[in-house]
Image 1: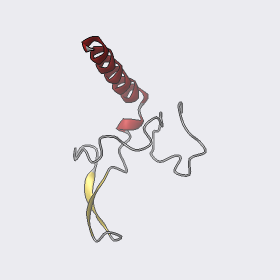
Image 2 (image 1 turned 45 degrees about the vertical axis):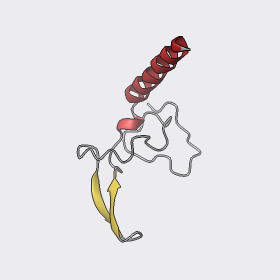
Image 3 (image 1 turned 30 degrees about the vertical axis):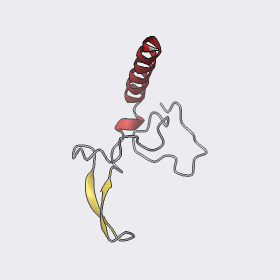
Image 4 (image 1 turned 180 degrees about the vertical axis):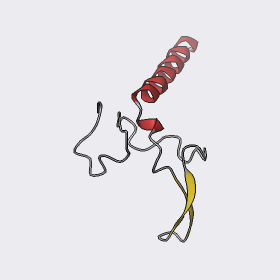
Length: 82
């Protein structure tokens, strides 16, 4: 089931198996993890670029929740230091 999805986005759906659109663009791009993407030739730029078109890791609810938990933990720790 799709949750946290912006169905009005002109790119929706951007990936197969989409669960969560919180991160429209991956904050880890280019991760260069060959399990998640690959270099591909771009006729527009005339060079190889990192493509993660088939990756849906950042669009999994479990992944988004994990990232937010890390952010919350770091914010709490930073607040305690001040």
